[in-house]
Length: 244
Picture 1 (cartoon, rainbow, N blue to C red):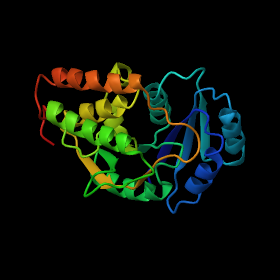
Picture 2 (picture 1 turned 30 degrees about the horizontal axis):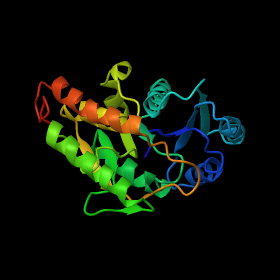
Picture 3 (picture 1 turned 90 degrees about the vertical axis):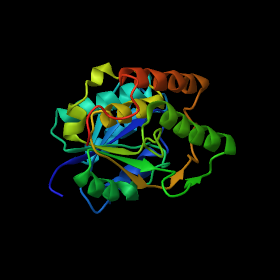
């Protein structure tokens, strides 16, 4: 694969996870750059990221002044990537819930798709270390999204993704409104309703063993209302405006 690929990892207090994650990505059989988007982590994650970047030319750091949401962190990362001519731009959590060994599989699938989504529920449930209430919430959210919007994804809230450059360029990134986990739904829906090609690849999701989850009641509430907004934006359709 000759085109450049970038993995964006947003961080907030991920000091324990970042060094082993970066080392893992550097050892992959395909060349991939890493962009750490740090939200001024109190635990010094940003400083540690700078030290890693100084040692490895394929590691980059984008510092943000404050913690103001997953969505804003990814939008900043997308703009950074587009300004530097990356062809494949990936999202990945910084806590090893997403397995870096899956990255080559995403890049291969992206050769024939505009967006590739890692699915925890494609051909069965593959989630490790999650309490039952989180699993039920996630599965319920997936069905909720499908019923209201028609978005035909088994895992619309998943955050392990690979976008082609042209796919992100087709969107008005400044118009993306959501910021929590509904950010994943909104991005996928905007892409799907254009008639672009979305592929799902099965992944095993392992919940974090270190650090704290970012889930909150506010994030859930945002997602509940965002889904209806997306349906209205699509003219009350449950299908794309254009055929892929």
